Image (cartoon, rainbow, N blue to C red; front, side, top):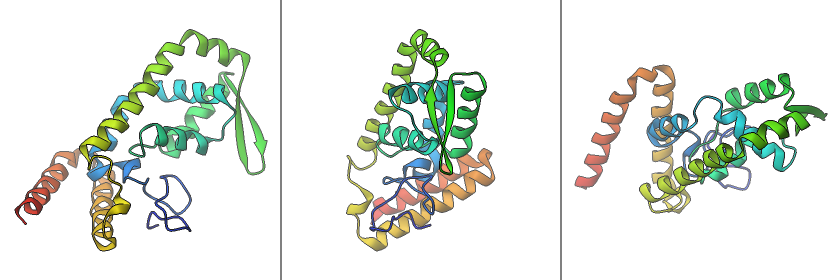
Length: 194
C-alpha cells in the first residue's frame, strides 16, 4: 500500500496494492487536483472516451484507467468504481461487447458503437485533449515536471503521508474541502518560512 511496485517504482492508482500514481496523481495533492480533474469530465464524458479508446484497440477496464492516467501525466486516474459501471452501461446499450479473457473482460467496440462514436468523434478528441492539457498544467504547477521520486526518501514518505491523510479526510467528508485546503496552505506557508 505504499505506492511502490515490486521494482521500487511508483505505481498507478488502481493497481493491486497501490494507492498513488507516480505523481501522487490519481487523487492529487491534498485532493484538490482530483476535484479539478473530476469536474473536467462532464456527464457522459468517461463513457465517450472509453468508447474512443476501445475503438483504438480492445481493452480491459484497467487498461482504460492506465490510458487516462497516462494522458494526464499521472495526475488523474478514474476509479474502478466509475470505469466499470461505464463499461457495463456501454455493454448494455450495445456499443461494446465483453469477451471473457481469463478472470477479466476484454471490451470490443461494436458496429453500433462505431456509428455512435463517429457522430461524436470531435467531442471525444476534445475531452482527451482537455485531459492531456490538465496533465501538462499540473506538471508545470507542481514542480515543473520534477518527479516525487527525485526527492529524498524521508521527505517523499512525509509528503505521501500528508497526501494520504488529506485524501482520507476528503473521502470521509467531501464538504470539508475548503478546510483541508486551508490546512495545506498553512503548511505550505510554514515551509516557505524555513
